[in-house]
Image (cartoon, rainbow, N blue to C red; front, side, top):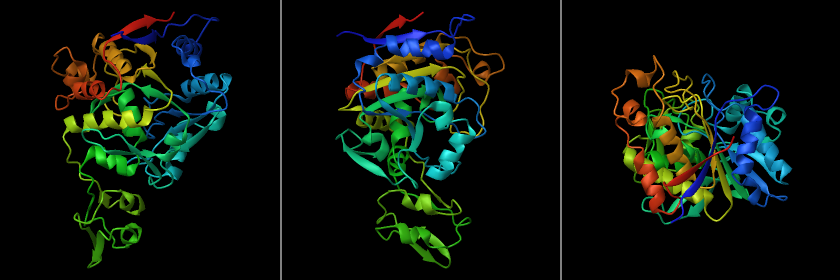
Amino acid sequence: MEKSKVYFTNLRTITMVNNRQSKLEKLIRTAGIGQIDFDHKYAAIKMHFGEPGNLSYLRPNYAKTVADVVKSLGGKPFLVDCNTLYVGRRKNALDHIDSAYENGFSPFSTGCHILIGDGLKGTDETLVPINGDYVKEAKIGTAVMDADIFISLTHFKGHENAGYGGTLKNIGMGCGSRAGKMEMHSSGKPFVDQEKCIGCGKCVKICAWGAPKVTNKKSRIDHDKCVGCGRCIAVCPVDAIEPEWGQSNIILDRKIAEYAYAVVKDRPSFHISLVIDVSPNCDCHDENDLAIIPDVGMFASFDPVALDQACIDAVNQQPPNPGSWLAEAHHTGDHFTDIHPDTNWKECITHAEKIGLGHAEYELIEVK
C-alpha cells in the first residue's frame, strides 16, 4: 500500500522574499490543491473562529490565503463553522458571527463570507447515512453539506477530551449540528438545571416530542420522550438546559472519526493543519494557556488521517516550552498523553483508518 503524502513547510521567512502567507500558498499548491476542479463550485473552508478571549486561534490572514487560492482556481469559497453545544459566545449564529468579527474575521479581512453551518439556533442539519459502528446517520450542518468541495483549515493543539485537536476533530466535531455534537459527546439527553430555570416554557414550545414539562415554574425533561435534538438548549434564555457529559473519551474519539467520514465522503476534500501556538486545550476556551512546544510549521494533505498523524509526530519531537503545562507534567514521550492522561488520542486515528477515512502511514515531503 502506498503511503499517503503529507507536505510540510517550516516557518522561516526571508526578508523581501516571502512571508508565512506566501509559504502557505506555495505549500497547498505543491500539495496538489489545484488537482481539484473548483470551476464555479462552492468551497467550504472549515475553521475555528476562536472563542473571544482566546488568542491562540488561527488568524484570518491564513484564511484569506486559502480563500484567495480557491478563487484563483475558479471556486467560490466561504468560511464555515457550526454552533457550539456548550454555553458561550458561539452558541447561536448571531453571537457566533459577532465573535468571528471580534476576532478579525470578516469579508474584508478574509476575502470571502462567513456562514454558520447549522443555522441560527444550531438546528439546520443534513442527515448523512454512514452506518458506522456508533453513528448510523451523522447530523451535519446543512451549509457544510451543501458545498461542492470541502477544505479544512486547522489549528493543531491539545484537547481536554479528545487528547488532541487536529484535522479529524475540526471536521467531525466542528461540522456536527447541535444534535450531532450531542450524539458525539453524550447519550444525547439534556437536563435542566433547576436553580437556573425560570419556567418560561420556551423549551416546551420548541419540542416536537413533548419531552419538557413545566411544573411549579420549573422545567423538567422526560428522557423517555427526548430524542436528543438539542433544540431546547438553543432556545433557553438563561442557559439552564445542558447536555449530559456522560460519554467515555474512547467512544467520543471514535464518533468524531465517523462524523469526519460523513463530512468528506463522496466529494473532493483537502486539508491544512498549522502546528503553531500549540495550546494544551481547545480554542473553545475563552482563554489560552502558554503553548506547550515551540512552533513547528504548516502541513497539508489530501489524507486527514495521515495529516493528523504527521502533526502528532512533529509535536512529540519537540521539547516542552519552559514554564508550560507540558514542562510541569510527567514525561512519557507522548506530549498529548502527558497533558491529558485520561484521554487516548490514538483511538481516533485507529478508528478513522478502520472505516476507510485514510492511512496513518505517511511520506513527509518538505516544501522549501
